[in-house]
Length: 157
Image (cartoon, rainbow, N blue to C red; front, side, top):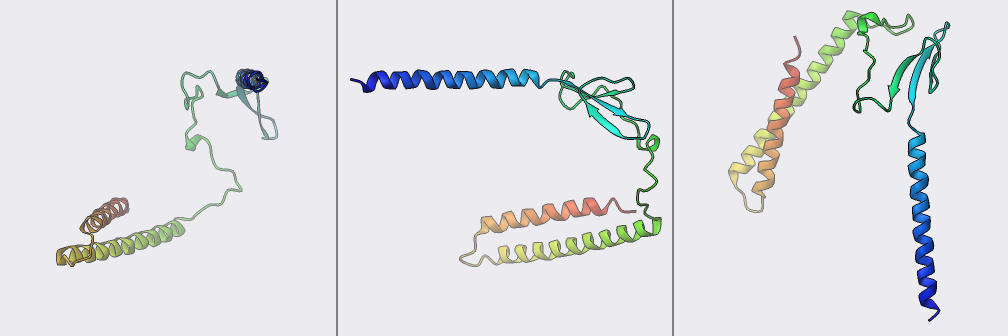
């Protein structure tokens, strides 16, 4: 008979603990809402803070109309030049990088075409013990890869 009251008491304590924990989480969530301001001082140091300072710009607000949208208009990259210490790439270096990338993509496309042809040949042979469904899926994937590589290669001039 002592086991039943003890069980009820433990159930009540556990329920109260769960309720208290939920209450703490809820209160904590309300405290976490704040606007975030971005401030740049005279030396160019950037500071993010939850308190407004004269000259600060609102960088983020939990109360924005929808997630992912900001009321701040982004500047175009042309109006925000790179720092002087930022590494520069010459047009010749970029051309070499592009040529290398194009060669890698072409090699990968040739490999995919060979693999596609092999899979189609094996499927046509219809040898016993070969799963036609997995070969058909393999053929589909090779065709998809070739299509994606063609799309990427079409971006080169």
